[in-house]
Length: 542
Image (tube, rainbow, N blue to C red; front, side, top):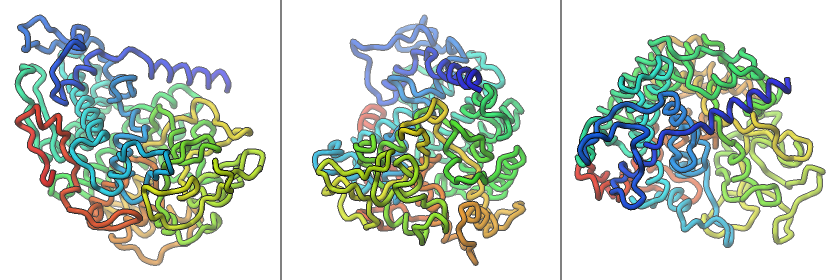
């Protein structure tokens, strides 16, 4: 077993650190419209620049395998890879902190960050917001690299093609979700010509086509959850796009199609795709400890469809106090905790145990007196008992070190309260319960083809957590059903797109947020991009 784990670590380290094509840095500069200066990047390793200045022709990427790895990995400077989704900034900030599950509190001199978190929660951002710009750059650069890899001159393998198609669809989906439009430049087009801009309908049609082709190709891994976690094949497939991940992405796109494009998605297809994921062997994990779903270092479970080879410790440390090893900014909404209707884990495992039970730090909603691994009660930095209380939050700006409940789903299992080995850091990105919730919602929206009714589907999820069965279920109940299960996870689209889908993102109030103008359903196009591309029209209201 130890030898197998060493092989996994080596394989994943190689996967993370191989050379990424130098074109990435150039993509970033191009997409925000900034001209090259004395820091002008070199293109020669990636494309043929033998033509006239400003009109270089694309000759294919230097290495299709390196380009595919660049689509996965974070990249020290680019951050365009899907593994970068593990960060608490960018996608997570726009999808979760701006929604009704997560907030970032300023505590004295801590965590102000010039207000970038507060304006997200309060919905008062503008076109110059740091994380708006970074998300715009990252997804546009990722889309460009995917297009380059998919070009026939790059000679991608069949497997590389299928994976790149799914990743391309993810970038399009996110750009349309956040911004409502997508810049596009033909690979052979003169770089001095401003990119054209695809409408949401045009861009999503491309994403659908890419997903359909990848799924139908037969060139994606069809691994299921029974493959041993201690084997290299399981590890490689778990952190790579497989057939189940592609089906998940297509179901997600169809479920949200109406809010993305104004045209209703195919709810029968959502159900069919989730059925196909289930046919691959994925199902609700029913291990004794609900939070073992996220304990990938030690637990092979039926649930995880895809993990990101990143560092899930962010999801612990951003929530916890410095005396617990964290940086104590992020909290979950008390209102979300109260949706469970209980603080007793015997009545709903998802609330987790109180703070003293698991090596000093519990999983679920972190509340009550916090303790060190040896059981000693902790204090804050002013020597007050470190107690996280079930109290509604009232201010983003004025807080002590104890305010706010925390949500932690990644178990800390080592005896000293530290973190286990490399596998722990994998970040759960897609899991079957999320897919099952999509299937239930699609059924409530008129889709057919599921074995279980939507009520039976949701009650199976509740039963796994030990929660009492619901007697009835309507479409209007689903936002709360989803919040109870997926709070704080940063899944594709996050909490924000759920609220958008139900018309709740701007029109609802929650702790420290009031009703805002409906134009804030979309983020602004970054000011630097609008200023340098005359084809980009700023979104309404900005």
